[in-house]
Image (tube, rainbow, N blue to C red; front, side, top):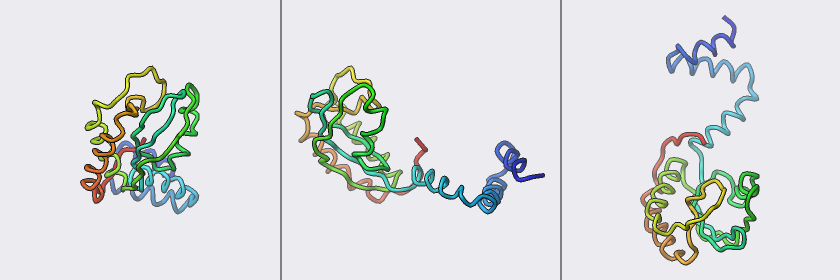
Length: 161
């Protein structure tokens, strides 16, 4: 059975150890794949930034909570953010780096604690429910600073985006 057949068979009928063996063989046969694997591992296990930014969306001041494995400025240059609205980052107010599981759990809890600060809008953006009224900045920062210590040592896997 060739490597491709071994791979296909391992996807549906193999044990975890069969999958590890096949992946190892693929890495040895095609070492360039390691760069792609590391990129995926970074998404699931690497560092992520949990942030609070002051931004203007169509000239309206807002607060945005989020997490990213990339830089914050690069995140908002992506086409999916710029297609429908004019976005300008005024200031990155908080940005702490955590392991991915800690980051995703922290950001999720922060959003839960700040649900009353959300702004109603007709935004057509990813994370549109994470935009908050700028007048609530002190409350958002209070929650961020209070919650952060609980997540700084959390280590684990998060699902890929």
